[in-house]
Length: 210
Length: 217
Image (cartoon, rainbow over all chains, first blue to last red; front, side, top):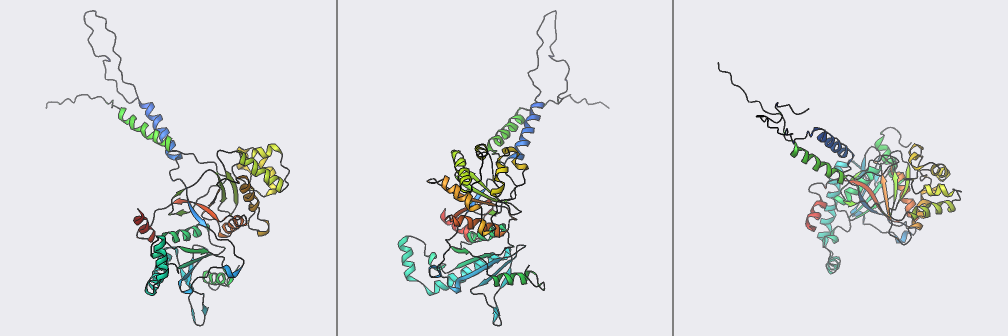
């Protein structure tokens, strides 16, 4: 085993017929115990689930039938993000215009979309700061909320995942809203026109649609 | 040349501190380990920056796997009678003619992923053999026949007067329409607040969230 016999067990000289009990070593060979200990450690290390799952809150609005009750967003502060297949991200600001006057439908990616959201948010904040809204600011002060809430209240992000988007993409974009502190966002069904545009961009020349 | 004699040293090292540390680590892992509940399907959840612990009691767990199958399970640690109420509600509401033994088996069933038609077969199988059954998932995509609506309604009725949370646990590869169908089933039951189960991710540096977390501290 792990020890080598040093020879001469007790090591005492037995002199003149004195009978002494042979001293036994108090050392126990611990190797098997260590073996077992480490075996168990390895087992528990492998089975341990260290990262306990966390949850992300999601509130969905009620389906509103009456168009009069719908919340209206200012066109200048709206950003629409579309999710396609293979982690494609598209976006446009305000109303979708794809005609002779111009095309504001742009392609992006998950690494890039954060920059776009921050840019747009800053733009909206700067504009409302310039204009000022004393009524809202007074209201916020009364309620003890920061004045910043007035500046970005016009910034609305609309999320439209298409049918090829994965659940991961959806969670990622919701997460992006948290990361960038977008306070107003909504998940909306994609429009046919937008889906066609995505199809055209994803399969150029392929005719689009399945 | 004079030969130098090396003193013969013992190779017996004192292993006590070594053993101490080993068993300290061992006891840490034994206490820290929480065994995963059995899952009908392996799920890789997406990551998010939010860090709320997942509730494991008084909740309805809706699982979506990578092939878009939907599973329904009720999580109730203390009151096992909830399970009986849920399955009785489903049995009478959909007139499935389940036997009392089959309904009792629902307590042990971890997740249901079959249409109502296949429920009898699933519940007549002992719980530890249910993994062998090929569960096609609860049909949700057909808006007219979204069976998840019934399951949620039954759970809602059983948990009446108690706090109930809705957990949606989706695989990264699950497609959005499945998620939308699950949400619409919840919406039909007038439930608008859900928790999406995710794994924790660190907050990106320099983001607005990081700043607001710092100021609030």
